[in-house]
Image 1 (cartoon, helix red, strand yellow):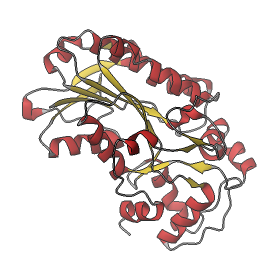
Image 2 (tube, rainbow, N blue to C red):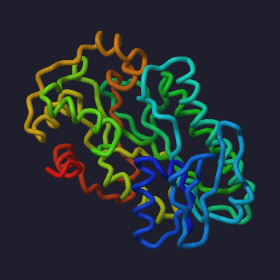
Image 3 (tube, one colour):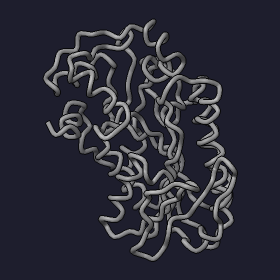
Image 4 (cartoon, rainbow, N blue to C red):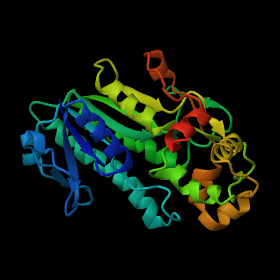
Amino acid sequence: MKVLISGASGLVGRATGDMLRARGDVVIPLVRGGQSGVEPAAAAGVAGVTWKPDANWLDEAALRRASPDVVVHLAGENIADGRWTAEKKRRIRDSRVLGTQLLARSLAALTPKPRLLLSAAAIGIYGNRGDEPRDEASPPGDSFLAHVARDWEAATAPAEAAGIRVVHLRIGVVLTPLGGALKAMLTPFRLGLGGVAGDGRQYLSWISLTDLIAMIRFILDRDDLRGPINAVSPNPATNFDFTKTLGRVLGRPTIVPLPSFLIRAIFGEMGEATLLASTRAIPRRICELGFSFQHPDLEAALRHELGK
């Protein structure tokens, strides 16, 4: 199977590519123009396909030559990298919505067409919902991230209209020491400076990197999946429980709180949306289809990912 991956040099993209190559699939990276250091799919003699989503351009001739069977679309601006200025929010939205529109249009024009577009999405689509469980049938929220996520998923419409099966993988907080939220937490927690954020009651919907890659493989190997899938553990944790569990795994105290007013002062809207908002997402559909989590329990997942 030939798999085109956008965001192939990112955290999830690298792990996905490693999994696919290990089982004999051909990985074709979708590479931003001018980007270096991304390995081509040399085993099949197919170089990476170049695109410039900011300029609404994709090398369609190279895409035709690559002729992917499946596309895994993971590209998008990091939402937690600094305060949200108007420019930052524009990049967050455009990198997801405009890039997805460009890719979906380009895939729709292919002959033959790929059988599946697995497009990253986010549980942020549900917004800040307190302790209300949210599954794939729940309506979207009304926050900035919820609007971005809704438009992100809608941007795949050209591919779906052309008969390509589309799955929206609504990813939660990915637990891995290699990057993302957990990597950012490790240094202060190891120094004994970890603590509860806000009142600690807000839910964090998480998934181990191991389970996320297994879920991607599960979806790629099926022909009956379409629409949204919550890529989260069946056991979301409150910030309080997550904090205490991480401290226990690291063998460190967690007694330095991070008050809400300080989060808002330091991080602004970004902190409000990523540290204080509560999303209790449940992976109903993937569980109904028989997917088995290797690490449904938070402490076991942290111990596995951290080698503890």
